[in-house]
Length: 335
Image (cartoon, rainbow, N blue to C red; front, side):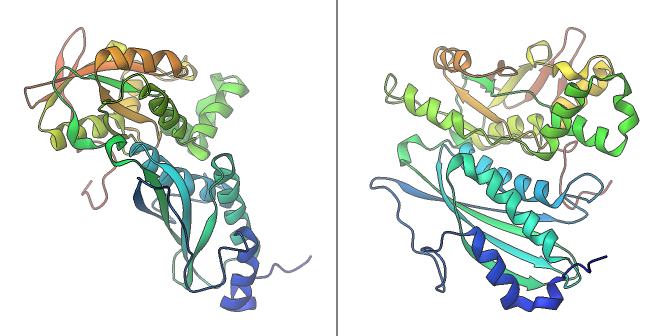
């Protein structure tokens, strides 16, 4: 059996030499990368950190999937600002006992996730650590007047979601307890697992909004992504905009793969609080929301409206309940 090469066997410079093959040769090699943005645009910067045992585990996520999910999270943040991606950098901390093959698979997953959006890795850093962590900074560009902000929702706006929610959480449950999927066809099982391991950032929505602005040049769009859950996104937007919202339970689409193995109560819990679906939650005038909805795929829906009263409620046929920030994933929460 061939012994696997570990990071400690080749050292920092040896690892860096291998990782440079994942970057454009004309943009690396100096102390920093030189990048340009288009005239009339603002630079958008976002950083996201993934830690082994907190955000991923070898029980549910291959190194290539870790890389994919890491870049998807950052590209989703750019999409949530209405920005086009330019480039990203990678800060990797890891024990020397990690195999070089694991690291190369991680980077290949990042490259695969970035390729559809023609976004390069232009540098970063590596260092020794007792636990694997991945800190990515993504750079994008947007015209200032076209930026999506959490703080500009107005009463009367429609609340539009760009796709299904709860699928990523369902995929995680299937990875942890595969027997739960015994009632599922393989294609449905695979779609839910894919939703967790390889989410697609909704940068396509940025293009659709750009097209709409040719008809509505003063279009105002509030919003954010739903990486911490649909309920979290709606509440965060309302807090930032000092407004409220009414959400209709029966207008939130249920992923078709939930039938027959997920109960109604479990479905709404995952849809509101499951997180990591990386869809966008947008607030915009109803007429424009309806036009955008026609162009979006399955799972997109108008799920409610913004109100002047600063409460965020979910209306069911049987009851009205207040949506909370405390049930989705929160770092440092006591459970």
